[in-house]
Image: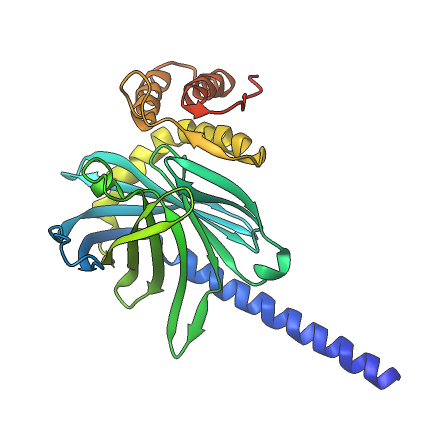
Length: 312
């Protein structure tokens, strides 16, 4: 009996040691996505069930992007993307949070609405959730899966619902949900974000497939000096966006459905927050408590439903 207990204890120790080693390898893969990159985004529609469907033109754009690690703890890694235009104009881009064995999700439904979903711990054991946020740090999409390290390859892939991409948000009304098949792979040149997406028209009870598309987004590492302007910009602006994230986090902790209005006073939410950013950063000294109250007021004005921030 004693030998059996010793063997069981040894097995547990071995399994835990492997899990910790694997978790460390996962984190290294995630953090390797940081750096200065020449980026290219390519999308092409590949299939439609309706033979009369007219395929939309292929999409291509390219540029320079900095990916910064802005949080790094045992179970969470946060990466902020910044676009660089004409070497000096900086645009705050999307953000990706990676959380280990996360059980709390905001899953996109349709019409600017995200439903809170709690998953059992055993379902996400050993997995990392990628939470992608809008340029205003509001929700976008979330998916959970295990990182795979095999035969010299390092990749993560999941499928989840998301709003329309920005490239089609104001141009398309024939679908209202993108079912994203996301694959992130670490490569010799940097990393690859590969997508297999379905454009879906979602009703109250059914989904109708409109078209499928393939996306290839490449991040090729380049000289860090090309991104110095973005690093300086983030150093000057991060205090405001830290406050924005804290306000959103309060909302997420409510664990309720989030529904966001498309426009208020004929402006989208990110426009209002960018205006507020410019206003508040011009004031000296910067007062985070006061700024957070202003951020809460702006975000509150875009929320449908009965959630109220505890202004402080």
